[in-house]
Length: 319
Image (cartoon, rainbow, N blue to C red; front, side, top):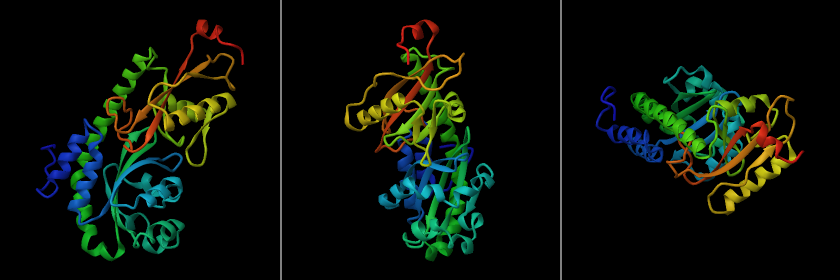
């Protein structure tokens, strides 16, 4: 726990968990549970969000009905009217829900009527966003029932403001350690870290992470793209079939390294052939984990895409 940003005794257990999460991302789940405990039952959530596609990615939470979280990830995260305002929030600033979207506007939305209202009219709360770079942010927020707003919201907002420096420091540590873990993984596979693209997808194919090289490939759209739910789709049918096999093995087989496959679709004349290796990850594996945090109940697939040298490419069958 940082002594530069002291917190009161009530929040100290939360700050201690957040500090521990810097080296062990599994601690984020316990940090959220501790924050919920000291906040009179405020439902708390921490999730990554892609500002470019306005898509909510993986998340961890404490207090929500798991079925509502599933519906958020599958649909409602894409119409979260608060998330649309994330670009207006200054880094580390804590904003109340009403300051982002006034109640009179919120109650007219599908997000409110079909997701917030069934959860005991959970329109109150506050949150903050912390940038991870490449258009990705991490949001930390608490949701409060409308009838409890006057009693809880201001206190929760102050608590979150006090915790922001601690959360930011641990997330940045996660990012740096994650980058080192990614490079170590590439080195073990004899891959060039600078030119290897890393994409991480959930067991349902949804993209949750890309390094700089991976993000460039996503933006080019030459070899693969993303559907409306942020699921990865290769342009070459053979590569798509290989991805489907790798995801099936991820869900039903022991963790391991799947057979590599090639991206034989459209490519520029001077572009080398790309080879993709699929590596199984689990959210509870902090040694191989390339992300700041993962849902520990899920399995993930790390796709390592690297160019082949001319000599190796010449040995591959055409097509």
